[in-house]
Length: 154
Image (tube, rainbow, N blue to C red; front, side, top):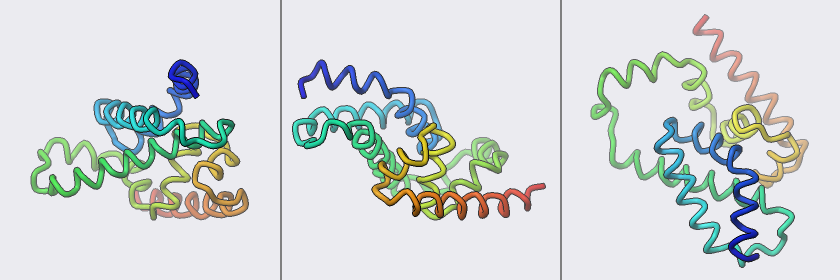
């Protein structure tokens, strides 16, 4: 795959990739940084992609991995005591965001891809490299847990 073909493919799914990064990172600036880094890493590795028909899922997986790496890096650098009080209050005022973040990673990834990034259940299963039946089961479990979590805010 040459650079122009790579750029065209990324541009075609840039909106979904950005939504995914934004949900993980929580801010526009951080999402754009993670997305830029992911695109850079993917460009360097695009020659290793054996099945070009899976480009979208491959690229989405790179974005997710980059977001997780960045969040791990941030966690090491920033303790809760260092978050400005005003920012912490605004963050706490978002029950859905908090409820999604409280889910186990396997369920959180599925919810973010399905409901915030706009992928279908089949595409989500491919991105997460799980069978569609497992994705459906995780989706039901995640929605059930979110419902319980959000009922406590009502």
